Amino acid sequence: DGGITQSPKYLFRKEGQNVTLSCEQNLNHDAMYWYRQDPGQGLRLIYYSQIVNDFQKGDIAEGYSVSREKKESFPLTVTSAQKNPTAFYLCASSSPRTSGNRETQYFGPGTRLLVL
Amino acid sequence: GESVGLHLPTLSVQEGDNSIINCAYSNSASDYFIWYKQESGKGPQFIIDIRSNMDKRQGQRVTVLLNKTVKHLSLQIAATQPGDSAVYFCAENSGYNKLIFGAGTRLAVHP
Image 1 (tube, rainbow over the protein chains, first blue to last red):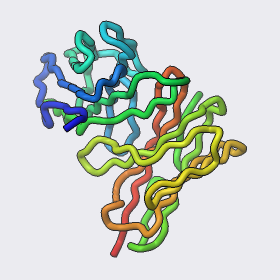
Image 2: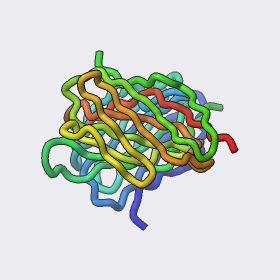
Image 3: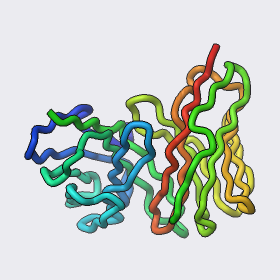
């Protein structure tokens, strides 16, 4: 099956702990994204990567870090500097550029992060 | 600033009726719009998209209308079913393949 997988489904973080959320895609998409969703709210962009070994900050990057060593993988680390990490985290990817920048983003199933 | 918003946070409809979910956008330079459906505890699912050179696009039971004059987007669902109950998001392409999402509208379908 082709698609985007995220793991784990639920993740618990202790105070002062860094945790890493996994995102893998086998769609051969160049671009990958991380969003945060809080209850009753829309999606806010944390980081995105248009190509391997390159990534840019989104609107709420503070307290987060990413890497893009492989095309298929875009892990997100929630660091201890993120003081309010409890949220639903969504990973997305989009197809290679054809013309313009009109690319639909496809989402994974999400990871819910809770603080102990 | 740039934003995508929705007129109705919650919409309740009877099964079999048609549903209309509305969305306003503020960036007149946006040229691509997407509707997503999100069920509880799941990731958003692509429903339908439209480019700014169109004013209407139809899919299976869904139609998206774009009115660039008033910067308004709507999603019409025909013969709404219980499985359509979800939160619906509109998103606009703000450039460089960055999407801006609205807060979402919850659709509740009653038997």
